Length: 153
Image 1 (cartoon, helix red, strand yellow):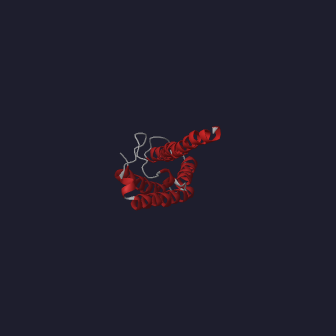
Image 2 (cartoon, rainbow, N blue to C red):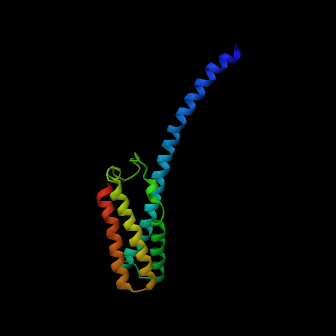
Image 3 (tube, helix red, strand yellow):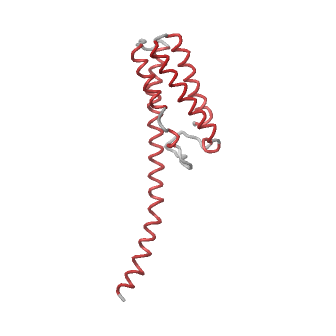
C-alpha cells in the first residue's frame, strides 16, 4: 500500500510541476527575447547617433570612426533580430507595438530593408566619399524611421 499512496501523491505533483514549467520558461523566454531585441536596438542607436552627429558637424568628422560605426551597424543588423519578437511579446518593457504581429510580413520586410541599407552604408563608408556617405546615411536612417513610425510607441 505505501507504494500506491506514493504513486497517487507523487504522480499528480510531478504532472503539475511539468505543466507549470513551460509557462515559467515561456515567461523567461519572452523577457529574454525583449532584452535581446532591446539590446540590438541599443547597438543601432550607439552607432547611428555619433554618425549622424558627425554628418551634422555636432562632433568632428572622423572617417575611420564613421566607417567602424557603419560596419558595426551592418553587423548588428545582420543578426536575427526577428527572433527577438516572438508572438505575444508586447510588454511595458518594450516600445514595440502590437501592430508588428498583425502585419508581420511588412515588419520583416522593413527589417530586411535595414539589413540591406546598413550593409550599403558600411560599403560606402569604407570608400570615404563624404557626400555619398551622407546620402546613404540618410537612406539608412529613413529605413529605421519607417519601421519606428509604424511599429514603435
